[in-house]
Each structure stands twice: as structure tokens, then as C-alpha cells.
Image (cartoon, rainbow, N blue to C red; front, side):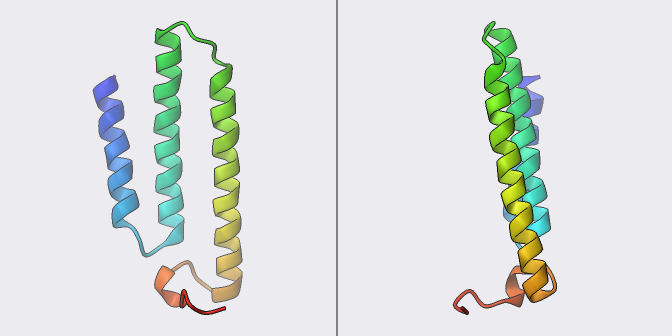
Length: 93
């Protein structure tokens, strides 16, 4: 089980580093990585007989991260018309 989680985590990192053109793909790969980390944390806490309330804290931070990314995506699409990173200048105000 641990090997499968490690492979899935590195697949998520590979997609995150290779799909740099679209903001939506980077956000989806970040959410995939967060879900893999949640599964790993849950399995670790079950194995060590730990309290599972830590997973609720982790999920609440993951939701906040997802909402922030989605709001950035929506504002970027409203101002520039697409989610390509190269469609806007970074030095532009």
C-alpha cells in the first residue's frame, strides 16, 4: 500500500511540474497530491492508533487551498479570457 501511495504521489508531482501552461491542470494536480497525502496520513494514524481529528484539520486546510486556487482561476479567466500562463505579462499591473 505504501509503494502505491509513493508512486501516485510522484505521478502527481510529475504532472504538476510538466503541465505548466494551464492553471486548471496545475490546480487539479495539486488537489491530487493533497488527496494522496490525506490517504497516507489516514493510514498512518490508523496504523499508529492515533486520533483521527488531525485528518479533519488537514481536510479543512485542503479545502481552503482549493477555494483559493479556484478563486484565482476565476479572476484570471475574467480578466484575461483563458487560463494560459503565457497569455499575460507578469510585469504588467
